[in-house]
Structure formats: C-alpha cells, structure tokens
Image (cartoon, rainbow, N blue to C red):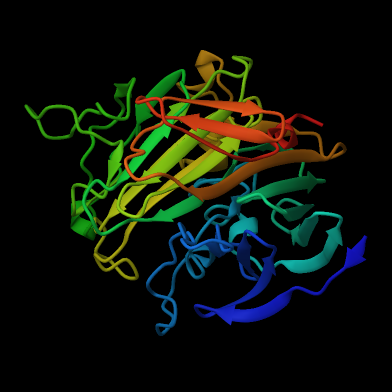
Length: 385
C-alpha cells in the first residue's frame, strides 16, 4: 500500500480534492463532498464529462441552503430530503449535514491497481461519523463509492444524489432502467407559481413506464419522461420503488445520442429500493435558480420522495406496501452503502438499453437491435458485506 497526496485545487469556486488513474479523473468538493467534475474515458479520443455543475459558481453569494452552494455531480444525503419537519427534536438541514458541511481528508492510498480517496465527517444534529471512499480501478470507467455510517442512531432516509448535465439537443438524453415494482409522481403540489415555480406532472399518480406519466393538464396524453431535455419551463419529481428481495442488481442508464456516450449507475435494491428523478428544465425562477437550470437528478437511496426524515420514517403509502423508505440504525453496528457509477463511449446508433448482464469482471448492456457494449466492471463490489 502506498499513501498518496491528492491534488487540492479550487474548481468552479469550490476547494476540491482531485483523484485520477488511467481512465478516470474526479474532483470532490470539501464543502458537501460533491463529486464533479468527473472525466471518464480520459485515455481515449472521446472523454466523457456527464455531471452538472450549478451556474451560480463564482457569483456573489446569496442566502441559500448549504447543500446548494457547491451543487454539482453526485453527493451523499443523510438524512435525504428537505427535512422541513423536525423529527424527535432533530432539525436537520436539507439533505443533511453530509451534503453541506465540510469534509476532512482521511486518507488517499494506492494499492496494486486501485486508487482511493477517503473522507470523514462528524455529524452534530444526530451524533455520528460518516466515512466516504471513492475508488478508481485501472482499466475501469467507473467510480466505486462506499459510505460507512457509524454511531448515527435511529430511523433515517438516505440517498446518493447524482445530477447529470443536459445536452443541447431536445430529447438527446434517453433514460432506461431495470424493471421496478411501482412508480409514483410527487404526492403533493411540488411547485408554487406564486413563487415562480411550475410543475408539469399530476400529483400522486401511478406510472408503470417513464414513457407514460400523467400530466397536470386535463385532457393531455401521458407525458414521456424517458428523454430529456423536454418541456422547458417546468420542474418535476417522480420516483421508482423496488421491493427488496426481488433478486439481482438494479441499474439505470442515460444515453446521450448527441455525443454517443452512456452514463450508468448500479445498486443493490436490498439497500437502496428507491430511485427519485428530479427533472429541472428552467422551471424555477427565484434566485439562485433564476430560470436557467437544465439538469436531471437521478437519486438512488431509501426514502419517500424528498419529504425528509419525518415522513420517510413514519408509515406512508410506500412503506405500507412493504417497500422501506427509511432504515433503522442501531448506532452500534456500522451501516454501509455501496454504489457504482460510470460512463463509457457507445457506438453511433446505440439508442436504448433492453437488458444488462453483470458477469465476472465485466458488464454487458444490450440494445433492442442486438448491439451490445461490454466494459470492465466489478459488480461483486455491491454484494452485502
């Protein structure tokens, strides 16, 4: 084992640690632990940078939740959600201290063909210590993320919060997922027009396919939420839920048909049964949004939408169906969350994912036309310890 010192640079206004290997270069902000920018396929002719960085970086600071100051890429939320309602005397900030407090560098090591960055954060609202580890493997266009929660006792939702940048061409980013148990739109009114916010989807409706989701506009056909950007002027939340124990890994893929690359994320649904989509297409006009944000959040975790620790921990319409929306931590045994995300180049014309297979040392994503892309991946990383 060789200890290394990662580069520390200010990137888009935020002090960040930078880690890299032959295929991937990533930056993680000190504030909130947000992972971006990330460059995949850096050893080839077509590098891929899939993540979003909010446009207010470098602007004069205005009052906003701590999570939003560095807003970019992927970050870990504990407890996930707005947390507007206190829970047993606890008042957590939006998406928890993990998404907006300052992290400390714990270690950076090189072991054989892996390079890892390890960070540490001590939580105060609910006492605990959270460790985050970002690992790169030579020859893999992926980031292996491991989060270990210690001493954080009681019920809580949690999630990764990946945010992708949108292409310029309408509907050029196409979304595909493994089968899911249930899809629901946001249970309440999401947007308030009096505050300069607008939503497109009907509230509290069921969907079975992202391509057919009920609109708020009466008489309109179902909306297609499997391709972006679309519907400028609106913002929406919708969530897929998976029943634990269904077997196999859960995946999501985003194919950019304009630049011919595919971003992917893979999880164990026994640990993270929820996948929330945050669709932002210039639908919020109050600062700092100011009607200029176009991004797609793909947020895998265990939660009841973004309702926070209180509503995710109490019985709700999803948990009553046997699908967990929070975990009950003992505070004595560390709780571990593992997640893989990455991006690869794909052939021109590779426009969908019909199925995915995870084999020893590699993954295979196949289109409906029979075209397959194979790439190095260690899916065994997601096995429960």
